[in-house]
Length: 350
Image 1: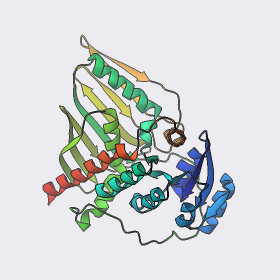
Image 2: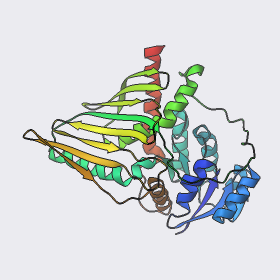
Image 3: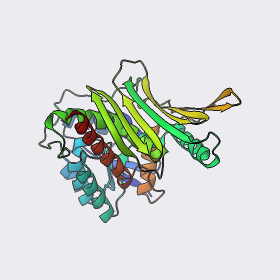
Image 4: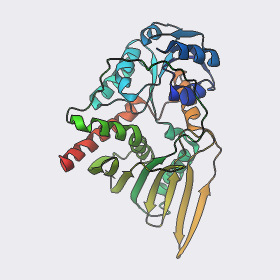
């Protein structure tokens, strides 16, 4: 089965991450593009040989030849566009996070499930070959008890260079489209905290989602949260395991993001790949202690870009294949947890 994909938007990420990946995914045909900037649409259409181009998402909705839509939009638009696309019977892929509020996220999931539609959120780290290898190792360690009990998980994101020469998208001097789609925030969030919430969701939703992926079947709850400017320290709990999430923006020539699982007799370190580096996967190291001696084992897995694997998995799911680890239903817990983190921040800071 060929899955006919329509794109809603073709900006930087739309081109270099998603169009690049979906155009190479087996069983996928990109048949339509909706883009409000006419010249950009014309040039992108020519590069990717897209048959139909529309100036609005309403025209894309009305195209019966489109099975699924990749909506590459700022996350505050996911609810507005996602609701219309799902109501029109289109399978849907959006960037992360899925929505600004848990109420909106639940509405999108309900629409998808009522329409029997495949709805996925772009947490591409779950498709990284290094992450998947680490997940298998962690599952084996839990079963065998080789390193003892898991005491703590520490995840850090200090940002840095997230691009590392991914190429240049097509650009024009056309102004960005203006709309009246007001961002939607949790009711408990004060207006001065809106940009803080935006930053946290845009960056740390990946870390929250990855922790939940690597600690399956263990609900993750927020114990406390601290913030100073753009610096965050969040304490989570998963059963008997404490999970810390720490981060602040730094200047670095590389991407600084790591997740470490600390066991009684060793640890597993996952150095996340630079997001837009197509030749990089997560680095994984396993440290073991035995009779006072430490050994380090490094995993080397075949390189395949997480964004491409994500696109291929989504196309396969729409075609009736395997299920998705980043379904809307699965990702609801991320939105709930991030809302709770900001409730804790309000309690700490007023």
